[in-house]
Amino acid sequence: MDWVNAIIQGTLLGGLYALFAAGLSLIFGVMRLVNIAHGDLIIFSAYVCLTVTSSLGIHPLLALALVVPIMGIIGYALQRGLLNKTLGADLLPPLLVTFGLSVIIQNSLLQIYTADPQKLSAGALEIASVKIGTLALGILPLLTFFVAVVIIGALQFMFYKTALGRALRAVSDNQEIAQLMGLDKRHIFGIAMGLALAVTAVAGVLLGIRTSFDPSVGGGRLIFGFEAVIIGGLGNIWGTLAGGVILGVAQTVGAKIDPGWQILAGHIAFLFVLAVRPNGLFPRMSA
Amino acid sequence: MTDQHTVKFTPKNYVVTAIVLAIATAALAAAPYWLGRADLRLAGEIMLYISLATLWNLLAGYAGLVSVGQQAYVGLGGYMLFACTILFGVPPVLAIPIAGVIGALLAIPVAFLIFRLRGAYFAIGTWVIAEVFRLGFAQLSALGGGSGTSIPAKIVKSMAASRAARESLSYWLAFGLAALIILFVYLFLRSRKGLALTAIRDNELAASSLGIDIWKTKFFTYVVTAALTSMVGALIFLQKLRISPDAAFSVNDWTAFVIFIVVIGGIGTIEGPIIGAIIFFTLRETLADLGTGYLITLGLVAIIIMLKAPNGIWGLVRDRFDLSFFPLLYRVEKQKQDN
Image (tube, rainbow over all chains, first blue to last red; front, side, top):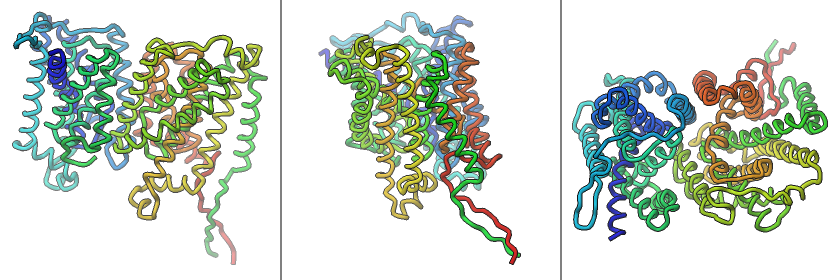
């Protein structure tokens, strides 16, 4: 029963990783940009939420109503003001600029909030659980998984059923022709980054309620999100959820064997998938 | 009267640059005789960073392999030094090349895995490898596990009897390795393989249509870089005398700083990493009091340079003064002739 428990907890944890990955996957799909600062932006969102909750005295989940639009606007501004300038045939500028951004965000957070671990306090939600048979499932992990499924479903719907989704896909397929059809790619890219950071905001807040965080942990979150994307297969957003779940299960099962093996087991699962299925399990486009 | 063009390899001021280079090399080789203890230590550290930056530049600036995981090999080299000396009683100086060989051997399977990823995903993949190394070494109780270990005083003293002699030896090793690495990169880039590498960087499709095996060329570069980075890592921790997984596989110390050095100095040039390292340490010695502000400044400067002057400071100098200490390019010279 312990093993079943580990697998179920890992599955629910996978929802959080899928949320880390969704923003990464979205911007890669639209503009082939890999944002090295993605993990730091997740942690940044958690700190924004911390500031909102402590100054207004509201519940972190309620604070999402503020944090999500704030991060969305920051994303749009970041893309239009900085990242659009780096896009082009050359791979180096976006990589190195987002790398610099990562160091700037990390150290700015360190400067403002110090290195002390922080946590978003969500009251009873943190420890509430439901009993199913002999298993106790936390309400928060269940909620996180549910939110991940809803957000991924909404992104999928947006991509394939709305005018905005059509614009995003058009720019992704061929930037020049999309421009000729009257789309402003700079604006579309801005919206894509805004959306990505709005999702990131949800991920950051749920992370902050679940565990404590400090300015240095962003890199690790980037890696988990990235592993979920690659395991699931590029360009397939439901695959990303599956990738997150596989990573989560690998980590909880690894931790069950030996607590020191938790993160390592996740990395090994990732490398194993990379070795046997280099395009991920459910690829829609090639790397 | 017609204009005649000739293609020359020797750069314009090559006599001047050759003399400057020779004097600088001789002065640096003699540094233990004219530098104080603290300055000698700093000079050694600069040499180690010049080595790391030159190697990262070969990967990113010439092979198009942007890695944010070179700390994997710095840490591996460090741990191999500790393993060789503490567990097997190998003399420290001999342990450095052994670390290089092990780095190359491990880089082979790693390359087979992460070469499946492209571009930016390759970059994050290298980071995962470094994390795997870090978490793996944290499990090794023979080398102190998560809290790390130190080199016993007996082993340190076996290098040289007096403290001054040890410090000089340590500097010479760092200087020698840096000189060796720069010379290797220079000769490599002037060789047939290096030409292939530059062709791949400039246009992968065109290069492969000319019969260059892209995968093999990049693979060779990655493995050699890994071997040399491991040797630098061994030297770094021979100076530190203490190792722990977090220090050995630090992404900030061994990759972020190195990337800033190369970007600021000038990516894709041999002089760039050297200039960058000197600027980096000058800034560090003057701005270190700023703490986190120092890193924020470095990040901003790197972003601005990447956007406004992608060839870095050396690129600006080179274009302005037509200088080259390590000539790699042919130039066309116009000659006016009377008929």
